[in-house]
Amino acid sequence: MTAWDSTRVASAAGAELLAAGAGAPGDAPPRVAVDTRLLAPGELFAGLRGEREDGGARAGEALAAGAWGVLVAPEHAAAAAQAGGPGAVLAHPDPLAALQRLAGAWRDELGARGAHVVAVTGSTGKTSTKDILAAILAAAMPTAASPQNLNTEIGLPLAILAAPGHTRALVLEMAMRGAGQIAELTAIARPDVGVIVNVGPAHLELLGSLEAIAAAKSELIAGLAPGAVAVVPAGEPLLAPHLREDLRTIAFGESGQVRLLGREPDGRVMIDDDGERIELIPSFSQAHNLRNLLAAVAAAGALGVRPKGRLDVTFSAMRGQREQLASGVLLIDDCYNANPMSMRAAIDDLGASAQPSGRLVAVLGDMLELGPDGPSLHRELGSHARDAGVELLVAVGPLAAETADAFAGESRALPDAAAAAKAVPALLQAGDTVLVKASRGVGLERVAAALREDAARPAVSAAPSGRGQR
Image (cartoon, rainbow, N blue to C red):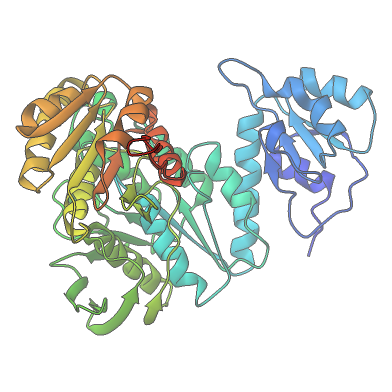
């Protein structure tokens, strides 16, 4: 096995090695950080150009903090090399392209060692599907997965480079904001299995139509090598034009090869996996996550893994976690992101999660990037919340005000997350079940934090009035 020393890393990244450094070679590239605040000693610092700052200017700071080396633009690399020191210095005109190339080289090395790569995308539920699939595969083989939301042109290479050398299954999440981006990620990851969880009205403002969204997601299918596996929702007409005869296609859902047969009151679920019956006891019960489970079972089956028995999944933060607060309120923290499809699923789950006493409360913020249809899609959400049994709706933001208008029930319209964080705790009472959800840019995690803080405060007893005392 060839050691990944500074010469090997520079070659894999297509970079010029200006200083070899004194770090001992290993059997893998060093882990990579793109933020000096998160840099650990022994990691490679990739100084990327941003809108407000060129990270390469922090090369000296990174080396002083004990970085294995730096990968930066030539003008920053020259100064870092002249300063001397034990760290390696790699120069490339486009450090991001070099980072992606290095990740691609490590993906090839993992493949040569027997690892398989699964890529997951979709309009909603891709992170939860990734989490479920990683839990299934981890029971059968050494598995690595994208941490949290490392799913972009920067995050995905970092996720690949963080995978240990003994990895046998690597589950990568892929996000996109426009056309061509999934294709870029697929070219880096070169997945053996590609999963499209669903197609819905996310990023309408940028892409214009559901057909364009489906085409952007299907760049994953287009980028698969002949003989690879595509996992898709059964009967999805938007994906039909993009399927390929030279791929093995597995459909999940009601009419697919992988489908849900039934659920038992004790939490057991029965799944038909291409004619084989599977019985699982998942640690979750939401309808949308059971559908995500079907996609994960299909992808695992493509790697020869069929799960059984107990399935415990730790979902990424702010994606539907339930938390029983000391105040008696059940908090459903789903404020990482939102679009019309995920909002409806979360509201339906709210109705199914109600405590025996108390109200159903929905704190819903703006859904962003919906374009001209944004107001009407928010109004439709208000009607859906009413029909789902929501008793109090708190709308946060100007678009969400449309949701409150269409709700036709008790509601509050607040301008932003700061106002909501102040107002919502006082609106709730013991026994309530509250959903907090919005697009990431709204920042509704402030509301969830305020509810936790309010519940943690000790109750204040009323002071004696003095009546009847002498």
